[in-house]
Each structure stands twice: as C-alpha cells, then as structure tokens.
Length: 507
Image (cartoon, rainbow, N blue to C red; front, side):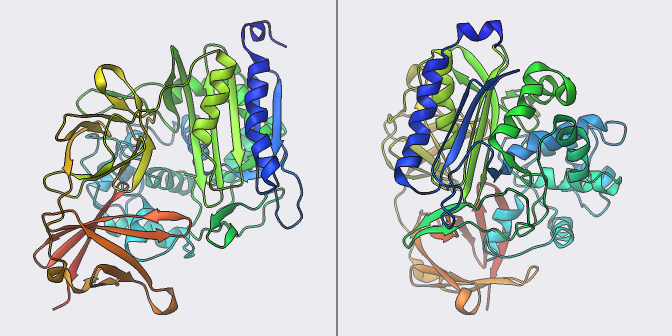
C-alpha cells in the first residue's frame, strides 16, 4: 500500500461504501458496487443487491454494466492519440461535409466541452414523438443531424449538456478508418488486461453485461433503449475494470500517460470565462479539495467516478438500478475518505414554478432541487445567500430576491418570476405539424397527444403565461417536460438539451 494512504481515512471510506451497498442488499432488488482505490491498490471493494432479478445472482465488483456517459473522456482520449488526423480547433465541417452551418462551424473542442450548443439527439427525437425505446441506426441519425443544422445557442455562449458532439467526433474518427471499439481494445483493454467493450446497439450481446432496471408503478422493469449507441455512452465494463483504467490516469502511466492533465485542463466560453467542464471530465469542489470525474446514465444504469489528483485516490460507483443517485454517493465516499464535510443542501429559494418574462425558460424549485427546462440538479448553500449546484455541465448560481430568482444557469444570466397562469388554452387547440420530419401532435383541452395507434401518448399541459405552456409527460423511465412557445401559427418546443424544433398549426 502506498505511503500516502496512511494519511487518508480508509476505515471511514469502508464504512461509507458498506452503508451504500447494504441498503441494496437488504432490499433484495437490483444493486451495484463501490470501489475505492489509489494509483496501485483497491483498499475498498463492496457490492450489494442483485445483478439479475431472474437468476438472483449477487452483484459484484466484476458485474458488467453500461458506463453510459463515463465513455466520454475515453473518446476524448482517443482524439488525443490521433491529433495528426483530428484537432480540437478543427471545425466539425472540416471533417464532416454533410453538416451545414452553424453546426458545421462548431469546433471539435466545443463539441466535446459542452459549449457548442449542439442539440442532443435523444431529446430532439423525443420532441418528434420517438420514445426512448424506438430503434434507430447510426447513418440515419447522422443524416438527420446534417439536415437539422440549428444550434441551441451560439457556440461558446453558455454550457448545456449534449451527447451529439461525441457522436459526431466518433463519426469523424470512423471516416478516417478509426473504429471506436477497436481503439478501445488497442489502447486500453488489451494493454491493461481488462474487458471494456463498445457495442453500437443496445441489443448487441455483450459478455458479462448484467441487465438494468427501473421502477414503474408495476414494479421493477428491464431497462431498454433503441437509440444507436455512440461513443457518447457506449462502453460496458465492471466497477473494478473501470478503476484499473482510472488508476493509470492517477498514476500518469501506461495507457493513461498525459491523459488526465489534458482532458481536465480549463476550457473557456467565448468571452473568456472559465468553465469547470473539460473534455469528458468535470471538476467539482468538496471543502478545500478539487475533484474531477464524470457520471453516466442509461435506462436502468447509473454510474459515477471521482478522482482526487492531489492524493491520487478515487472512487467508482456503478449500479443496475435507475433510482441510484451516483454523484451524491460518490461524494459521500470521498468525503469520508478525505475527512471533508458534505456541502449543505440549500432550501433558500421557495418551492414553486417560475419562468422568465418572455421566452421558453422555466424553473421549478422543490425541496432544494432546481429543474430547468426539464433537467434537474440539487442546490447547495453558497456564499452571500447564493444557492449553487456542484455540476460542471449544469452550473447554477441562484438567489431569491423576495420577488424573483436571479443568477446564472449554464453561465447564462437568467431572471425568473413566479408563474401566473394567464393563457386561455382554447386558442392552442387543434393539430400541429412539423412537415420537415413528418411529426405532429394534437392539443385537446389541457392535454397534448403525440404518436400513432396504440403508441400514442397523452401528457398534461399547464400555462406559463405569455402564450407559453409546460407539458408534463413521460418517456420510458424519465420525465418529459418541454415548454411550448406559441407565436401565431407556429409553436416551438424546448428542452434543456434541445431547443430547435418548430411546429405549424394545421389550417
């Protein structure tokens, strides 16, 4: 065991890991694993719950899961290895001729650091009526992006999470004969003797991959997703194998040589302000410590890792259950290991529904959780009355003035007022169509109906005032809550990750 380990609280970390996994074990449902490590050893390994509700096999640190967006930093590391063929300052359009401006003008770096304004494919498809279960393939998605062209906001002006940049960069690598799974095997899996894979479809058989689960009103359900798995979130593997790879980053050796420093280096907005999201890696603060890591979420899988580069230690949390809050759990374990106090949750801002005076932006506060355009994060107490998130990809700094919520979300200034419903929904009734993508929906009373035949869904609508509605629906295990902004015979739909779709009234 390394000499610096004695300065850390390994017993406390062991107890924290045991508390997490024992809850899964006691419940007897799906589970997960926790691994706490330094650059050489695994002093803490714990697991609980089941990797399969069918076989009732116990979950272990060797159980394979979908890493989901943890994949992102590995894709970015492959770009580092091939900078002779692709550079972070290159335009996407320099390599993908089918893209149109302004999407074509986004740089590789902005496509990967979440400042590119690229609309997320999954959320965009959901606003066209395709569910999370609808199967799609790689080339039609690229064709769709080539036709879409629009951005959520001008590149470099704010930060908002999107998987699309990673999909497009993977396509660039593929166009140069560099297949992501082959790169993964060549540079990471074989050199380290581990089994990470990058399947392209959810239904591809993968050795050792356990099923994921989400809880509906009917009980635990198998997690499924039809979207083609790009390098934004395709890698599978176990908790231990992920930790082995991360050890090379901490130790700056082997396949991880030079990777952590470059991927976690500061990135900036167009006005020069520094963000805390790098290239597939995100910084967060725990007391006086700066930690770097990333999470992942697929239907039925939730994962997270955190690294302390100074002490060269880290924690991995993986699970095959949708209700896991992995970022909070990873923070709890790291706080125990480092002897730091957890941040205090903030409830300074009154619960309620808020919206900007004009435009699509709404914010819901509920017990310290802020949900912006359908994407939520917990707020913690900051200095001078501010409430802040710990998320680098969804940074929030907000405060209540007594009449409004003011501050920043995604580094963009926002001011929200309590919603005063003032819309007569009768003026929005009828059929609305997007002829470009053959999509449509119907508003009847206070419901929105979308889809065809028995797959047609219904979601409730409430007024945000000012010819704006908020939809409250579901997409598989997840909420689907876009805002609708009406302008005469046109309506635009907005989610945090997709703000580019427009429908027209059917005359």
